[in-house]
Amino acid sequence: MLLTGAEIVVECLKEQGVDTVFGYPGGTILNVYDALYKHSNEITHILTSHEQGAAHAADGYARATGKVGVCMATSGPGATNLVTGIATAYMDSVPMVAITCNVNLPLLGKDSFQEVDIAGVTMPITKHGYIVKDVNILADTIRKAFAIAGSGRPGPVLVDITKDVTANQCEYTKMPPAEKQVKETDNEADIDRAVALIREAKKPFIYVGGGAVISGAQEEVREFARKADAPVCDTLMGKGVYDGHDARYTGMIGMHGTKTSNFGVSECDLLIALGARFSDRVVGNPKKFAEHAKVLQIDIDAAEIDKNIRTDVSVVGDLKEVLRKINERLEKQEHTEWIAHIMELKEKYPLNYDDSGLSCPYIMEELDRITGGQAIITTDVGQHQMWAAQYYQYSKPRTFLSSGGLGTMGYGLGACIGAKVGNPDKVCVNIAGDGCFRMNMNELATASRYNIPIIQIVINNHVLGMVRQWQTLFYEKRYSQTILQDKVDFCKVAEGLGCAAIRVTTKEEVAPAIEKALALKAPVLLDCIIPEDDKVFPMVPAGAPISDAFDAQDLASE
Image 1 (cartoon, rainbow, N blue to C red):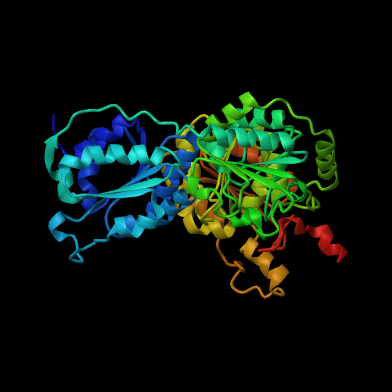
Image 2 (image 1 turned 30 degrees about the vertical axis):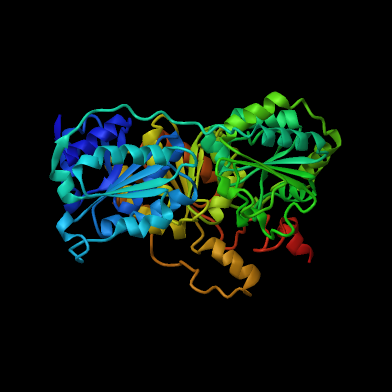
């Protein structure tokens, strides 16, 4: 059938099973929005308050559902406002297609009004980027974009379309979406070497990363932990793959990981990395990281092998498939003394905090209790992010959404909206510090416009908490530009943007506030006032070995 480019965009979205798009219109993309208007009963468009919010919402939708998220923006500043969200998705391997439109083809390269080479701008932060200048290749380009975004190691793909292409016509033939190809490993010898290494180990430790979430390998990981008889830690991105309630689970590893995980990995004789990339926040000092251990790394991306930490054995392939093969070949191991030692470390070094007053750990524990640990938690970046990772117990993957690689302040609210749209039957809660919340709090207007019943918890200490923590510990308390004491009232802001608001100042108010927020079934903000000098512990100084983890008790005893 003969269709315009704009109509082809919409038809291709329908081909790919897209039910929701997040975006913001403008001049060059008007034709596409006109086509969306005619198909509003098939594709829901969420108008965000800012293009960055649209990118984060598409990201949150993708992480929470496993589908490819879609965002849209016009040319120039509309497109560049997507960049932070695209980079966030790229760093955390999130499948996303960003569709932008540019000026007419004859105006390209002439510094035309609202013209930006967005494909060039985003080249380092996308899996691939396209500039479509011919309507005849538009459909195939969009199909390729979805295939690339969702295959292998996922990531964002940009499709930039000149405005005249959206108006031009060509023949369109509907095609079914390409089947997702699982990248099977054909290196059976590597798998055999991996199994042999596991058999030899006396003190194995499993380190789970975000690749395990993407692969959907949670059942295989849990079976593997039982067969290898090994303790399990995870990264920020790997939360929920291994059940946080299980006795083998030792908590997060790295800069704000548990002492049990950090000390255990430092003592183990085999470290097994499952879909993890050995980031600097995990490793600390690479020369001292797991220095007594051999390293086995399984990852779908060959570029991650030996990039940060040298391996003894590696297997490149889809983690779910590789672990399935390993589990078939590996007989049940037994490491009674090692497991007993790790259990002693867990008992000796539990997470703890000052419970004399209102604190974020207490809020997270109450949220966990009231929601039965079944909520989807999104976060911004900073102290609250670490507390949310430490004190809410995740038992399922895709329930903790956070900017791990880029560390994007302002990520969480848009991501929470996207997660809720993709999972309307689940409780979705964003945890933000007051510094982060200021960056994208305008997205409360998006939640209220569509009555998206999310809960926004602001951990309000009137400072940039994590930066202040560093200034306290390493900069002799020189609090340069980290104090946020001013006249901003987040409850009034939320109410002004159409949301309900509750201020929480004591421990006793926490549970009633959460229960009321859940009962309202509408967007609600909880402004939780905590002390300005609460700190996240344990902590490892930047560049130090993770075995140097310290907490408040260690500081007090110095």
